[in-house]
Image 1: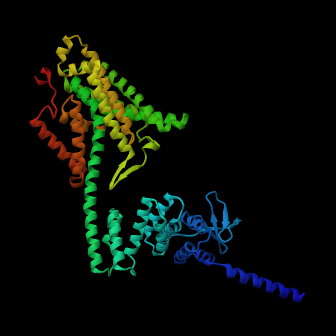
Image 2: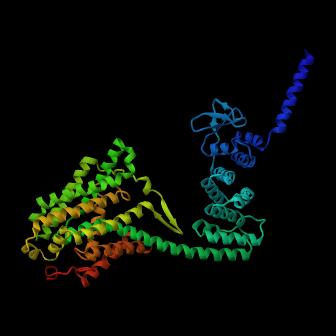
Image 3: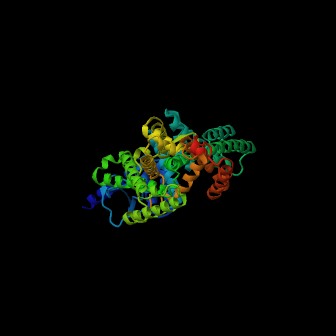
Length: 528
């Protein structure tokens, strides 16, 4: 019996020695994760990342997501469904009293760097690109050998550029690197040319040789000049985007103001009604036909036009037609109508903002150099110019357009020629209100949908119409784009509020010299 016990003890010792022999860096690093020490956790991450163990990537991802658990001196990986496996064997386990491994910012940076280095050779190009960006941010020198290997194998141009930028970021901050390699890294970062590259070139480690510092300073200055140019182009784009919004809001007002001379203070509420129509359409689609959500805006456009147009015709027939030739009374009446419409919307929908979703095809952005063009803004710009072109065609090639132009230029002569001016007034007011309604569909994608939505655009709309020329669509287009671009170019220097004040003063001075705006209408009545 004693002999058998000795044999068993020897066997257990041999098994333990064999296990110790096969244990690698991965297994050796796991006990550090149970020590509840940030320094030990950081050291363990580096060892796990370089171990090549099949579970290493899964372990680091679990640590990042707060799913790496410790219990009884052992480490467990919990998946998204709550199931756990032993971090050594990969076998399913149910640890009792398990607690997640704690992280701080330093450990999180180490996790990000480890994930980057482990996924640099992934077969998926998107994963490699994300990994390269992670290594660029972390500048972990331990990832350099893997980076070199990934660069040599990479065939995708965008991914290779990101890999080379990550390599340059590491070399620039590494002490034992030759001057030629550092200069090459500076050239690579200069070619990248963004704010991150500028930050690296502007914050070199202490003790950097003078020639390297001088080359980095020149590269940083070149990046600043390029960024300043791109910022100016970006501001112009913001101005075009703002101008398209003003065009949508003002183009309907240009029709009603030009045709009837009515100062419609309820025009902004037509925009609001279009936005709430979009909200109702999307709510119905969410509950009844979710698969149509991508087309919700296309469904909302004709409905918003009809709803706002019908309300506009009702306002003209019941109130405004009795006030022609009395501008002050018209202004007060339409202002009262605007308050009634706002309160009606508050009563039905409540005073808080309503969520209008953005379809997937309008999400994201197009990057061109240092210019970022969001798809929703691109869609609004295209939509605004499409509405402008359609209205031009309607006013130029339809009988309604002919009658509207005739009434705008000489109401009395148009009436003497048999044109029913009262009917044209109602249709023109409905058309202008309907266009404001579809403007609300577009604005629902970039602004809060609330009862006060229209109030933010009514003053700017009148400025656009008066500046461009009352009743002239081309004047409205030029006025909207001029004011939009000027506003965005002034904002970086004067601020948003002061910039608008400057523009208002400039328009007042301009109107003193040209009372009929940029593009004055021709006709005996308007020139009288």
